Image (cartoon, rainbow, N blue to C red; front, side):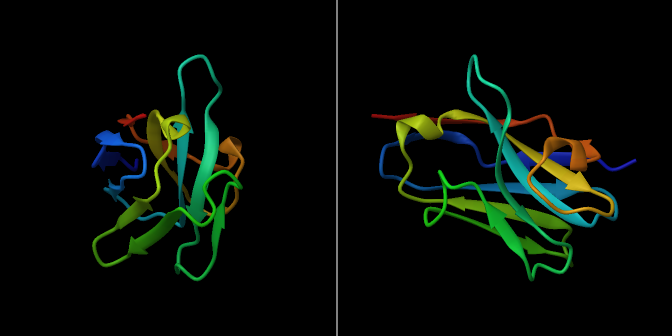
Length: 120
């Protein structure tokens, strides 16, 4: 069983930056970040393969967010810049044993989420 623990959420003004981190307890392949705003479905944000060579981003965050990983520490980070009020959501880390992509069903493990609030 893999456990994921997110950290780094908080309150920031529009245009600001935040860095989220997720630590995995076990061996995983690809990792991703999703987010869920109040009243909305959970949506894909970004993903990275096990070796870190391939990444994928939602159109809404391209050019503003960067996903990275440190396999020695079993962590994946999401650097968020130029934040907008519409980025406000609970952000979830997810891990997949042997798949990569943007669909929720691809991921086997989920963290508890961390709140990101962007004020205007």
